[in-house]
Image 1 (cartoon, rainbow, N blue to C red):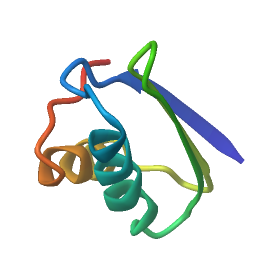
Image 2: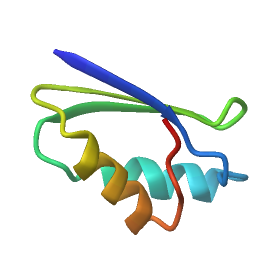
Image 3: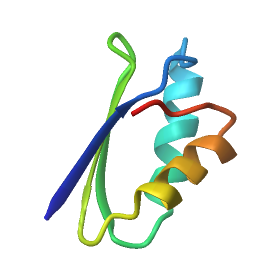
Image 4: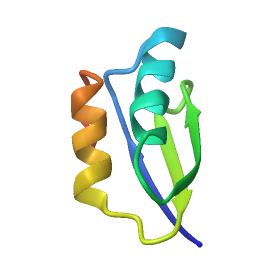
Length: 67
């Protein structure tokens, strides 16, 4: 199991959090996504995580990942 953490500074509400979590959760190999709206930190767990695909999913949700 691998983990990847990064920030998404543009998240401001529960809808933002749900959008980011939903897009990342669709990816193959992702087993868990934790989003902390207060710190703007996203932690993704799973096997063979691909950072480029995860960042593309965050972009698809309308946000820019940093990390």
